[in-house]
Length: 95
Image (tube, rainbow, N blue to C red):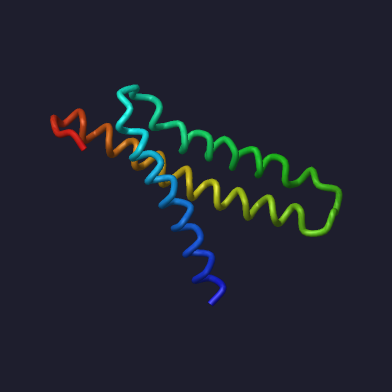
């Protein structure tokens, strides 16, 4: 049951990133739709890099890795959506 909750939360994070990316697609600046996925990816990399630097302060390192997993799911959703929207625009159709 706990695995189902984790998957549901990962899908929720990815869904929010997809909706945010799709909303930013309406702005005519092409690179702005990559911003949510890029920031989530940078945040995930930061969380992974900083996790081993904890000084045994409870479950802080586990929380950082969990946050990194959530951010990577969000980055994947946002970046894949942005790429698909770009492919759709360049193929002659507008989303």
